[in-house]
Amino acid sequence: MSANDPHRAGLFPHRHLLGIEGLQPHEILGLLDRADQAVEVSRQVEKIRPVLRGRTQINLFFEASTRTQSSFEIAGKRLGADVMNMQVAASSVKKGETLIDTAATLNAMHPDILVVRHHAAGCAVHLLARKVDCSVINAGDGQHEHPTQALLDALTIRRHKGKIARLTIAICGDILHSRVARSNIILLNALGARVRVVAPSTLLPSGIDRMGVEVFRDMKEGLKGADIVMMLRLQRERMNGAFIPSVREYYRFYGLDAEKLAYAKDDALVMHPGPMNRGVEIDPAVADGPQSLIREQVEMGVAVRMAVLEALAAHLPNH
Ligand code: ASP
Image 1: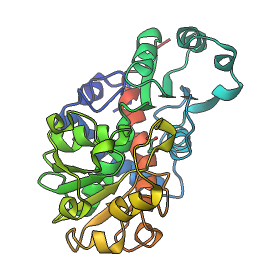
Image 2: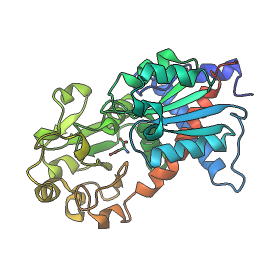
Image 3: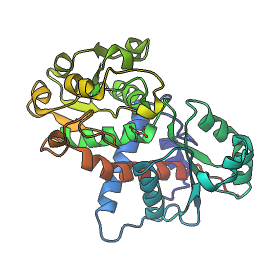
């Protein structure tokens, strides 16, 4: 069965991946199954599975990224695509070109896949998707969504716990500014997990309870009986006011250390999307400890991005 097989296209009927919102549970599970296979491919000596041979993937990052950009690059190359990283800092965008002009310029080069990270929440990536002929993948848009992060987190959890449904998952820290939290809440709820958020009131978006989560303002309460403790980075670059009294106090009340982790289940696992602020939201001893899955999340990130690229391959333009 080739990547362009119409039967295969039915398995993931979307041309773009703009968010977790709008995906059906079976589509999410299908991506996780594909990603499990991609883990096997990535662990072999010969890692090429050329479903994107001859295709062009452009990574267009308007915000800095280490993990996401490099893993999309590796994922595209493992699938045989020609991958180009566009340096926005050195591009016409810096000279005042509008997003629509950038889209039209890139479109004229006939890319097949555009991987986009942009600081505007919920609009820039969607706008681009409407203006280009190729598939668009959201690699993080402001505080809105980061779909491949949520997929890689789900993959990591499922590989350890064997399931997602009925697990108690506590997402802790800077919920307000976190696209990772948003995408994870949508995905984990869709797959039947019990999702909690744990944060000081200043870092909780208003109406968060309407997203189907239990809200806690105390770490020890919020971690009680949790299967998974997912820490978030304190996103100081998105803060323009005093959201926390001081980093020291934040760490004291919300930083994950061994004492707070002891409130979770004995076999609880610790996650963090990176980049970590050691000593701010997490104690280095916990980040590097036996319950941590943080390094493994990075490996799963490549596999999930391979799975998404492969799923979209069935919808690529035949220009
Ligand atoms: N890397 C993740 C993101 O791009 C998390 C973070 O930056 O804190 O959203």
